[in-house]
Length: 251
Image (tube, rainbow, N blue to C red; front, side, top):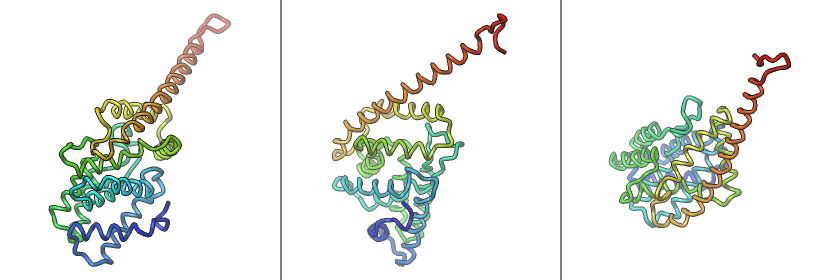
C-alpha cells in the first residue's frame, strides 16, 4: 500500500485531529505534514509497519475511543508512533525492533508545535508515543492504554491474518539469519505471555484470549523449529567428529 493507495479519509482525518488538538496552521501546511507522514509510512522497507498498520491502529482506536479522555491526541500519537522506522541489523530486533519511539516522539513534538498545536498537547502526544517503548501503560492513564492496546491488537487477529502478520514481520527482518530471528522472536513471545494481561483498557479485554492463543501457538511452532535446528547441528557436529576409515577424526 503506497501513498496513492491511502484511503480518501486519511488526510482529512489527520487535519481534523490537528484542529481538535488546537492546531492553528493553514490547511495546506497541515496537509503537507500529513503527506510527509504518509511518505514515511509507505517506504519500501516496511512490510508490516506500513500504511496498512497505521490504518489498522487508527481503526482499533476508533473501537476503543469511548474510553479515551482525549481521543484526538491518541489518534495523533497513532500517526506518529512508527513514523521513524529502521529495521537495520544494528537495531536488535528482540530488544527494540524497527520502530524508533524516541525519535518518533521528537518528530511528533516538533511537527505538531509547528502546526500551532499548544505545547502541552504536543508534548502529551510525544509522551504517548514514547510510552510504546515498553507497552506497559499505567492502568490509570486510559489514553495511553487505548494507544498501547490498539497497537497490540494484531495479536488477537484471526489465525490466517495472524499468519500474514508473521510473514510481513519476517520480511522486514529478512536480513537477519533465520535462527537469530527465531530466537529473538521467542524472547519477545515469552515476555508477552509473562504479562498478567496483554490488554489494559476494558473494551479491549475480549482480545485477550485470542491473542494468547495466537502467541502460544506461534511459540510452540518456533520452539519445535529451533529444536530441529539444534538436532541438525548436533548431528552435523557428530559427523565431523566421527573417525574416518583410517581411524582419525575428520579435520
